[in-house]
Amino acid sequence: MRNDHLCNLRMGKNNIKWTDRLKYLGIQLLSNKFFRIDISGVLRKVYCADNSSLENTKYVSDIVKLNLFDVVCLQFLRMLLIQWT
Image (cartoon, rainbow, N blue to C red; front, side, top):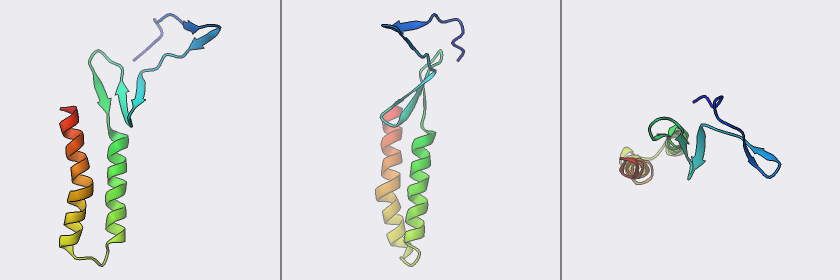
């Protein structure tokens, strides 16, 4: 979003910088005509957790790995989907 047409906003003698995104509770809120969010940072952290879990469970059975992913990663993704739909 271009902020060229907006007036300067001042607080005392300081200018307040206009921005088109805001980070709130780890999620980027984007400025646009409609409400939008960017959860790529959160998904990156989930993928990192998945990869770390895979690396640290090389010699564990597949059933234990599946249970670990279900408890940790999938529950987190389900919670995000429920919250933002």
